[in-house]
Length: 223
Image (tube, rainbow, N blue to C red; front, side, top):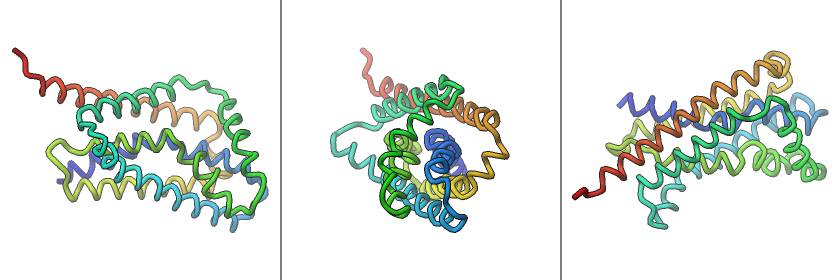
């Protein structure tokens, strides 16, 4: 029971944290709203956190039902999900050290954030696609379908809830204290942390891919 809880929580946290990248995304948001007061940053962090929680929860819970509707089997789903996660981890490992890509991403959404109140910007573009984008949603669906092979349990659902709490807490902390984190970690520290999470993500993807392939090969009737 406790094993299901631990495995589920660690799988979701290590798989989604590098993709969401709350530290890097918080720095981008900070650059887009540089003249906010501490009270405004607190409200902004809370709104983005609740929006991210809702998006990730729907992706984790409803993604499997959508795929079942299209008749996709669990082993095939695990193979596809493993490939998605492994490729995402590999891309993070191969990502250049400079911040050009982050600057380009900020410039792309900056025009959308130019007008309107701060509250109106929290869902689009600050939450979607800046904090939780298409990559995070697809990985959440893939991870949500990697349930224990012996079946779902209460501890599995508790692991999902715990992982979402940890992820959303990290989003809130990074958003609220982005300026402090930037001074503490520095550019070099942030890059080191993200490289380590990228390696873990790649290994998780390969593990899911192997489990899916094993199930598919086991279902083949050899003559």
